[in-house]
Image (cartoon, rainbow, N blue to C red; front, side):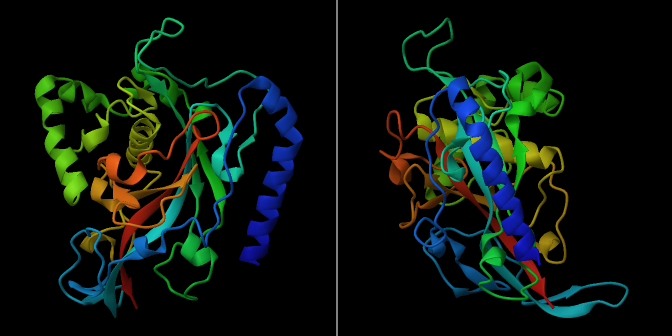
Length: 339
């Protein structure tokens, strides 16, 4: 029944997209993209390493977070039950990152617009365009619930998989906090503390750490090589390309979801029995894999950490006109007690 409901929901969404598409195309630029093929467009090796306790039973060349040392765990109440502590990476969310409002690259490049002007985005290069500053960008993000492992029934009845249906969970076009830096301060008032050269210089260390191994969680105001985590919106003041700029916007959005308690912690000993509040996002919990316009499906940097350099994995993967709308598969570290 769950699969039937998911299929019906997707069918209704696609019908609505086709109905609204003509007016959407007239209202803005052409949207490009394609549906994600779960076989050819997903880096399945990003699932690893797989660990039991502190022992990696399926190793990987990709860096991993710390896992609980003991393979034995206890969960449940009032009588705890003994289980096995496992750790793995799961493809849990899908994200569109685009300058074009109401553009859905991961839904085949459809535009599903409400029929009125809202949430404009842009990206400017070195020259002044329309009075805007140089090399700036404004991105929108669409956040999909995408529990691919559960959806494909790779392992049936595995309680560690998120049991949910495909769904569009968030669209920033209708979020006032995503549009304006002043309103965004309501959820990140601490940004003023880190708006200084000393705090930003520290991000160089986060850039190196995220590229070589894992980002530095104590430097939560940094997105490594991409720039500053604040403000928590899609306004990027220093854009040096589509890949860098879109990954920065996606990192900020993920943090915003945690700050608003719409995303939770799943890694470490605290996540063995249940998800937990994580208002300051731990960057090490996530990996981002490009799926649009050109999927990255192999190599160590196919699903790179937040703040890692975009030169090794994504150089040349954005191109003019048809390759400016980005899509990412969000991998999440999961530590779970299998009872």
